[in-house]
Amino acid sequence: MSHPEVVKYQDPKSVLVVGQKGRIAQLYCPFRVQCIQPLEQIPKDTWVYVEGVFLHPRYKLTYWINRRLYPYQYFRIELFH
Image (cartoon, rainbow, N blue to C red):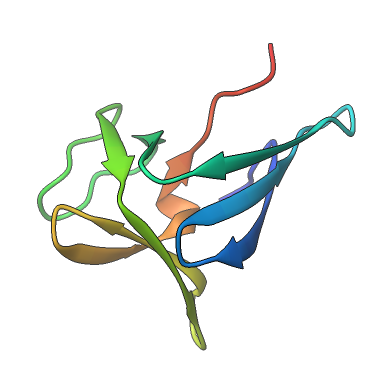
C-alpha cells in the first residue's frame, strides 16, 4: 500500500504529516483518517477518529480507533489539496 503522505510518530497523542509537496502539519488526537482497505470492523472508505498513536515493532505505527489498534497503512489522512 502506498501513501501519498509520510506519517511520523511524534508522541502518543500526535503525528507529523509530510505531504507530497513537502508541506508539514502536526495532527493532535483525535484526528480523522479514512480507511483505504476493509478491516474487521471498519468498512473501506469510512472516516474514523484516531484517539491515540503507538509505535509498533511489526507495523511501525498503529492508530487507536474504537478501543482497538490498527496499522496506520490501512488509513489515509487528507490534509493538503
